[in-house]
Image (cartoon, rainbow, N blue to C red):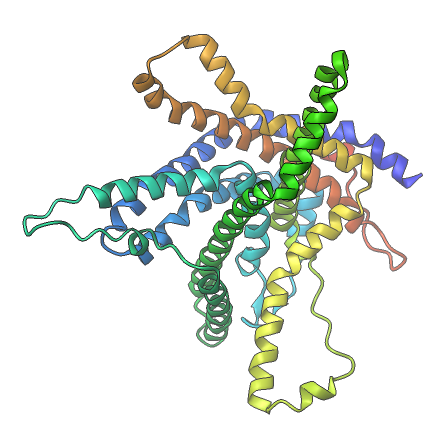
Length: 431
């Protein structure tokens, strides 16, 4: 019965999203455009700085996706007053951060937001677009250097900061230790800005991992396609289809459609779930359960020297704590039910197709253009489509997360207060 009631709430959630959009559309558009401006500006500055210091250029380059993410976070935070369940949760006191010895904030679990967001950023093709633009512009600038002293010293590898996977793993390890050290220093100095420096450390190492994962994925797909076994399967398939006569074309079309559907799993499943995880962490990170102490010490762990055990245990606990909001967001979605999640996935699938729709409308409006003219128009076309997508996604995310928080704030046998219903969400959003 409870599942049936939650399914009936789905239209109310969509209505709530529409009312949030009606109330906040103007500031949402401004924030989205500012986020996209930060992305473009970071790419331009990174190319210029890469001629002097490749490492600093990489640090600036990670600001590009950060502009997109910060815009989404600001939009989600702006809706808290119109979301009863989120407003109730925001009044609660968060658990204490074990490393910093203070109330946990969103910045302390930045990695829990970054990982699902980067999944969205990669699936949109934006990370590949950022790297393509940075790599090509920096390589062009490097190749066309002019020197009065003779041939210029061209070094693509150092300027583009191309790292092997071993280096990336080392970066991850160093970043974990540095993040833990910053938390320890903050616990002594009470200097809150160290938490933001630590968040930038996490932005850097997660973006490096995302770049390497995207690269390995492309290499892996190409490797599979080049294998003799894959080519043999394709040859046998072509032979089988050629024997079908008049049915060859329909069968080939259906097969291409099925494989296209499998190839679109990012857009159909991963992107909606990743967006919901981002929203769950941003608006619901205070629900993260406290770290449970070990009930029985491990005898092998006791053999390790006490200083190593103390700092090593603290480091591992720090890493687990920063990922706690991410796992809590996944658990929140797992309890929502299959049909509601499928509905949200369909809604997000429509939202992420907005850039394509904007492109088609613009082509119909302005007609055929020369290549140079279209290259000048294309960035604006992509920015408009992305801005509309961000605005619609923020409204839908806010309403969905408020609905998902309902059961988490539900009354228990201990007599906890009643949660707000989805109808109350709609009423508050329309107030």
